[in-house]
Length: 369
DNA sequence: CACCCGTGGAG
DNA sequence: TCTCCAAGGGT
Image (cartoon, rainbow, N blue to C red; front, side, top):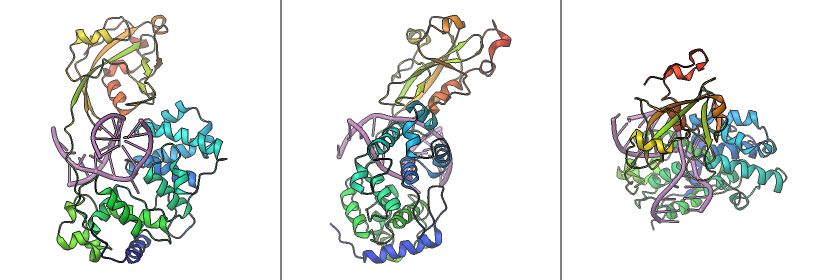
């Protein structure tokens, strides 16, 4: 177990000094040295930022604050509305847990977030990283924050050559050693900014790094090779056929609510044949159609990449009269207006252009592929 | 620990 | 086109 060769307080001082000169202004952040943002804002931003980039989060953060200015507002909102507002951001369990957490804080903590790392850790959707980040940023607690950025900075600073995820034990220890008692929140954000803008995964800009003189990996010329990681598994391909069923009078499409857990849990979906590892023929897929009608195979297709598999999507087009539509399970929405996960929007994107508009003016017309 | 869980941007 | 991966959490 390599020992830190540098003086931890010196590391923090260098990083904080760099942060004072280079910090970025973000909607959920207070400038260095000023009072921290409300815990609600810190929590909301940290959950949204889990495995998600800053540019992707910005508009969602603003939208949520407008819709639900306080944790009570969010707690009192129907979970369906929260899922809808989250649509497109990904990792939908976060939205479910966000709502659960808001209810817990609102109803069990009087609307006040716990101010300790341990207390925060007990809330839904708040894991080790987020608990430490909120404690440090919102409550000025010297919690050791460790995210992907900080892992990279520390792995390089101390030349940790053990591959992830095993290296985490050591990295946690190093994070604790380096975390200062003073301005721990600014320090955590500074380390993450450093990782995001200077100590980047590829092509780190070591010449601009405030820690260059202390960086063991830079000294050995191996900065870019760290942290080491275990090889990833190949991504399998799965196949489905989307059933684009339109209501004849207004062009609305049939959508269904997915089960609450698992992939895209709780989100709306376009009905589709089971996602399997072999391609479908139109005949086989029809066994899974949501209604008996004339189905037309469309020529277009689409693909969507998930974390652990790729989905290839064909589509069939069907049409039912309003009276028949009312009998089917699910809900009818205009294709452009539905708040859907991206993969479902791609399915709707397979609708022939003429079919997306209201079909009122061309009733009886036949779909073409 | 291993696996599951989205998305879009960068190189 | 393809690979990597971003302020991780739940199970």
